[in-house]
Picture 1 (cartoon, rainbow over the protein chains, first blue to last red):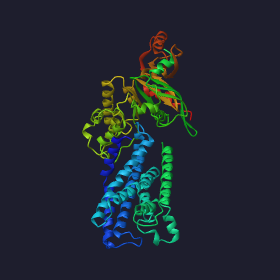
Picture 2 (tube, rainbow over the protein chains, first blue to last red):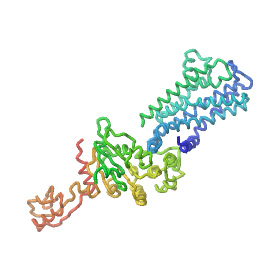
Picture 3 (cartoon, one colour):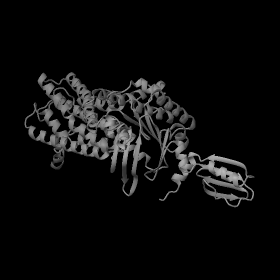
Picture 4 (cartoon, rainbow over the protein chains, first blue to last red):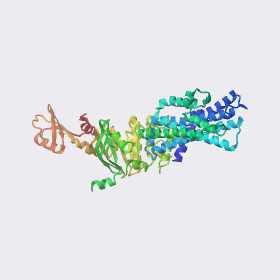
Amino acid sequence: MNTRFLALELRRAVRNGRYLIFTVVVPAVMFLLFVNLYGGGEGTFPNGLPVTTSLMMNMALFGVMAGPLSIGARIAVERGLGWQRQLRLTPLTGSGYLLTKGALGMLVGLPGILLVCVIGAFEGVRMDAAHWIGVLATLWLGAIPFVLLGIVIGLVATPDGMQAITGLASMLFGLLGGIWIPADVAPDWLATIMKALPTFWVKQLTQAPFVSGVNVGEALLVITLWVVGLSVIAARRYRVQS
Amino acid sequence: MTQTAVRAGAAVALSGLRKRFGEVRAVDGIDLVISPGEVVALLGPNGAGKSTTVDMLLALSTPDGGEISVFGTSPREAVVAGRISAMLQSGALLDDATVAEAVGLVAALHREPMPVEQALRQAGIADLAGRKCTKLSGGQKQRVRFALALVCDPDLLVLDEPTVAMDVETRRAFWQQMRAYTDTDTGRTVLFATHYLDEAEEYADRVVLMRSGRIVADGSVAQVRAAVSGRTLRAVVPGAADLALPGVRSAERRGDQITLTCTDSDAAVRALLARYPHAHDIEITALGLEDAFLALTGEDDR
């Protein structure tokens, strides 16, 4: 991959005000809001996870979704502008373009996760270093399906339809993925849908070291299926367009 | 020299090139060889197949048949090597980048780009480096596209209707820049598609005329004009009866005023004066490229 190109793309992405607000500021502010709403402090959820820790993970996960989706939105705009055509007059290959956008999606997801976790530490989340690293790594790697989802949306949507589709995806994967409500309180049919989404399983993996009964194998299977499926769609879609 | 020998050193060699979109034969068997250093205008009305040809040359689309070679390699290899580059007709610019950033992004992708400042300077927009791409006039945007095409330092520059959105003033300035670019660096090959005849006449060494996916004329501006049989002879000849003269293809008479369309106007004028010594007000004019253009592209059989 062309690192200089990636660096320039990263600068463009990060400079975008909307990016900063939605992927870095909003998750952090939501986290603070919820912690104060729930009283934070000593409370624990029925599964044994402290309220603050759980909220921290959920809001970081929210950021993990938002960053990559914003990169996907840029793809739709670049397609609409005809910039992709311009890039095809360079040595950049189609897979190079998608890889760069993928790497970009992974990078822009990182600040949001870090900020929420730093705030978490200040708000009293306590775990040992290995667990911190595990939580951060799981959240970050958990961005992969959303990076791919962002790319697929970017390749499918028109620049005009982008806003709506991103918003919808964000709602769908967030709400039904169990970021805002736990699957335990959902009726069976809803819980089934929730368990088909990557969001739910990334959340499960993040919690795995702290609660019992997480099916890690199933989690990895569902996430892998999403990753493979979205990759195939992205590759097909890109080939059709070029 | 054999045909293959010519092709081996050619900047562009197309043979039997074909591309169809559904029922439409957009490009219908084109043979064309362009030598390094030539400035060639690809001329033709809308729908003649100019853009389709250019797209295939740039590896933006694949031909249905025939062969393309750019400096002896495939179009994509030439693009990757930075030997061919293009200013696209509708190539839009990033809405969230400055001029220098946009050019820098493209430069970062090429293997041996020229410095971004140099590309901006050669395109005449050094002063716009820090300007957002959204805050540019139409002519300035074209110059940014020009800089994007220059930054890989190509040997062959393809311009697809470069001045289509420009006013007269901007067009002239653009071509001045263009000429300065080709003059300072000999050996640069330029192929530009246009439907402005005056641009072809003024800036091209050679004109390739397309119609309905085929090349209908190819040569210097003078040759293409001559292809439509050269010159028109007008004279006042009282009492002229027989106008079947050598070198005349067709004759027209209105009163004493005659108009002869000549294949060889020298022979025609000699014969005319020999037969009608009192002929006067003789006027011989070359057909303009426009006449040639109309003659060659007008008889549309669609």
